[in-house]
Length: 79
Image (cartoon, rainbow, N blue to C red; front, side):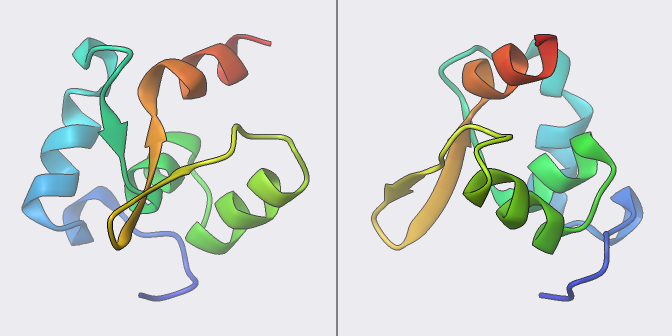
């Protein structure tokens, strides 16, 4: 994965669908770093830096993947 911010058109179809429906996803939904970066309008690397700095909620490890909970992201954005 590139360190540059991905335009929505370059996201995988499943990520693009999550991005397009982000506002209607349930708070319990889990999204990958690519979707978080697209929502925030920054690069994937910036998301990891913000999470490490405590500016974003910590992601969860689920099997071999890392996901953020949509409700936690919404709460962080509302601050």
